[in-house]
Length: 159
Image 1 (cartoon, rainbow, N blue to C red):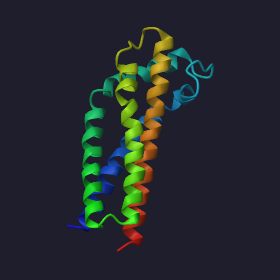
Image 2 (image 1 turned 120 degrees about the vertical axis):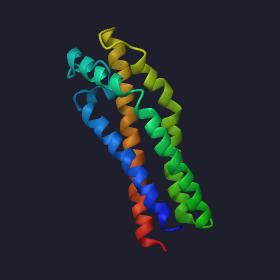
Image 3 (image 1 turned 30 degrees about the horizontal axis):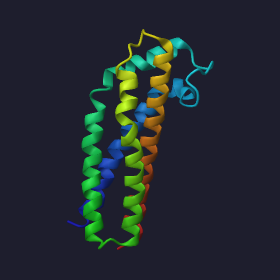
């Protein structure tokens, strides 16, 4: 059972990383909105088009990610217990849970910023919501990828 925990954790983190990577590629035309929602380098048409794509998946992906990250959380606790709260497993759990808390604290607000705004509505609201959600997706990508790398490293180098 102990050897299965990092494999399952890596699988769920890999799923999360894949989802966030795809979202990041979808949002690539509007990345500049993450810094300033009024960026002149992103046309209103591009912003509306990406916004419309995200609105199509906005009710599918959060439950999928919730399930995956809940699974990782349970497996992280199992890892802590199995390792008798070793320094390495505590560091891994700290990296994961600290990032997860930051993401979850903004999740509902940033999702509403896209979900509650019509793609053909006020372009300022479209840009604001899109920039915030794209930034959240990048933070999610950082969380899942960094935790996945740490899981691989810890599994490879620690007994």
